[in-house]
Image (cartoon, rainbow, N blue to C red; front, top):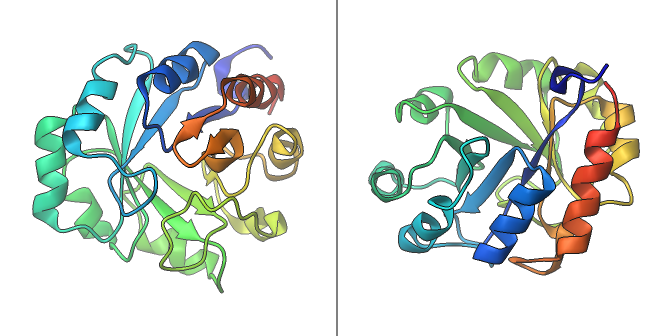
Length: 210
């Protein structure tokens, strides 16, 4: 069972520095996330463009937005070669798909959530990302949630929320996600990644066979 199809994909989010982008790519991250929502990790389009242009072809760039105006999303896309979009707000399926890019829809697990409603509401999403933040928050808070809620999550979901090298193996073995997403769990402070934690997170995540 050595195929990548049998191992979790890894996303490192909230990158703000070139050295962290390089470290994440070198560690084997499959996706790198760049935040355009209000956050300590927020980037301008110009800052993100400089980071994204250095990515290896095998790494997928993801732009994170939250209740942004359509023109603001398009302005970022005009300047940053994003491969995928991620939405954390109240966006519906039609709004998310209008940009012609694969998209991930984040689901706030810090409040009451109906899995059936979520599945039916985003038929065009490339994946649903279950995060530990409360509704209305942008993620990156380091909050976990009750992973047993994901027993009805459906196939190919993404797991986020308080993931770090210390809990990632347990999280994958319990939830069996398609991908995992870390931000604060591999940082020294918001937007400043700890390269040792980052490498260990990716190594441990990819050590688990699904």
